[in-house]
Length: 344
Image (cartoon, rainbow, N blue to C red):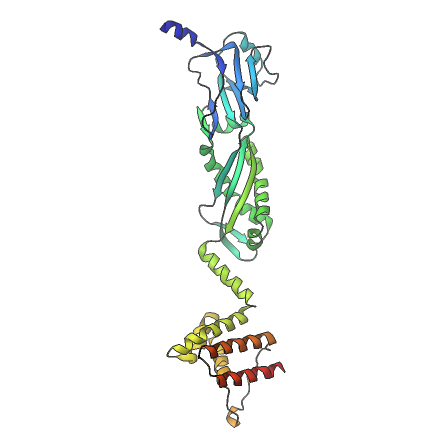
């Protein structure tokens, strides 16, 4: 009985692959010491392809379908001369199956910030991440360049190489596009298309097709993002001068509670902007108008024109100080009248 079982196993008459692992990309049919019988059946299912390798060389590639391996039914396209003559008798050959199903939701991202040259900010470091999808399209190229004679090969084994290649092309895309970081971050779809076009030839060389690549986020490291947020805030306030005025008004209630009071406000706020003395003088003049008389007559420093919006904003801030008890109603009325004269 054991002898009969041994004889029966000498020849293979059915060759097929029932995938039981969705991550598998290539799988070698277990030949052991067996030979393929003349007239054997080869079944290649949808989303599969099969490759015959004879004496270390790829002999033929089979797409989805059922094949009788005989000289008469052998596909016309072959890679080796006289490959069909092997079917005149049982022969030994390696058979590899390849999955052509899409590999979806594959994640990529920058493990560390990538340094790029930006036209607005100079040299900056950024992070980016997203997802991509691909599938195997050319088993001959994939077998030759990637999987080789391994018994099996999974997408997990390949993803490290693919992710690093994607990340490695990010700095190239930024440099070639010349688009500032701010504009690129706001148009991630266009950035993804440019990155995909850059990567398509590399995937094709591996026998793969990059079906899609999406950029989900482009950002700066936290410390750089904080600096950018401050710059955006300054611009939204109307520039550095308006931002300084805003900071000063916000600091008045706190300064009034401190021992130094309003006298130290200008230095405290101005140090950050390099205009401490100017702010202190302006605040002292605004809250303590000089008395009329000879002593008050002095050359006035040249001041930049004050717009109507700035005057209205100052009045609103001073009115807020009245509500907080920082200014008396009389002081507010006097300052309001003085500011309204400038409108006339």
